[in-house]
Length: 310
Length: 267
Image: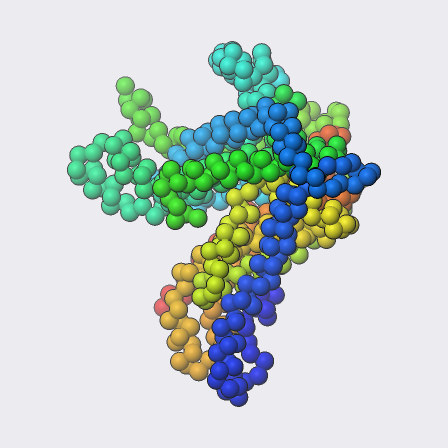
């Protein structure tokens, strides 16, 4: 497919064409290459955003049809009615992102510096779970965290669940259908998105820098804090973004592993759109989510000083 | 305490391996439970060993149909996104043109957007256009969100290419088409293959965007989602396990081929 389409071959022998015409042709090459793909993104990504913006300020009903009435009240209604779900989404996604970083960093470090000839094996093991549909794998957590299962028993014996229940993360001796199960699922599902960028930036670090730090009497902890971690910042930033953004809009984990008390904003958008059929409300909710995420991402990228990342 | 010292020295390795275990555990559960014979409709608790699901993988109504639909969509989405994405990647790396910044952000934004936002807005478009939801709307959506990932993968490879190789080919009287087919394309191939593989995986596994834009069409992830409400057949685990094994074999085979090539390239 690409083989036949990509080369911008002139239809006739270039030697026969007048010089000026050939150069015009050449100048147009990048535009022809860009045209189909960019057109696709404009029509099916950018244009829908415009439609959604217009839908969010419409009023009407499914029977009578919707009309643009600049009814901004919908935004206010959406926020005042569904702010718990918004806060919950950001809270769960944020917690999952931090957990991904804490769990993923040692593994990325292990692959980059300690795995030696096992490096490729470990990398395959990180990517391999991807190949089983993520819904099937998320359902497997229902088995793992089941009431009276091994995990819950161990946590109970260690009195971990007493602490987490007191914090409101679990309920008495249940893990399933609690915030903890949802965060656990989110962390699990987005870990590879954290590990791969971390690994890429760690792998680029020159091992001699570690030696140099050691020669200058830095302890391993100081070496890590002053040399390794700062150099891995691009990976940390892109990893946290790749985890937080999809996690904030996810509703699969909340629906499969949670309960009605753990609903995230994605669930609400889906229900409003596909079941309640209140399109303006759904569009407003989705627009707020997009604005919040984009705002947080922009501030975060500015703060972390890696603007060249994007 | 020698034990404590040993633990401290190997802290990172132990923590890393624990994370790896966390990531692999669900796959092991999926594999083990593909041999289960559950009592009720749900396959969440272990009862007894059975090969029933493996000997009759398509024994569940509609499951294999949804699987084949997902494979078809993933194949076409991969072809479409790879073709369009490769063209964009080449244009971005090799040419100067106007509005580069705008085009770059148009490619970046779909990756920085929660899936549910793209899903909802695309559905608004289709509803406004009065489009019939089904195979085509899902395919359009999949090509849209796979495109950016292909561009990123191919761009990385094309950027690291030595332009002198193509100059050399031209000096040796290769025409533009010949240069492209014999020199440029083979060097860019690993990047294109990586992009295509990523697109296939993303499309095959997508749920949220598909669920919004599929109408009454049911893809494999949608079937799994539905079964989480109605009852999970063991066959789901069989498919999951089979996909896992096939994918690992493909990766291992690819690695072996790459190694052999590397060895034969040496003088």
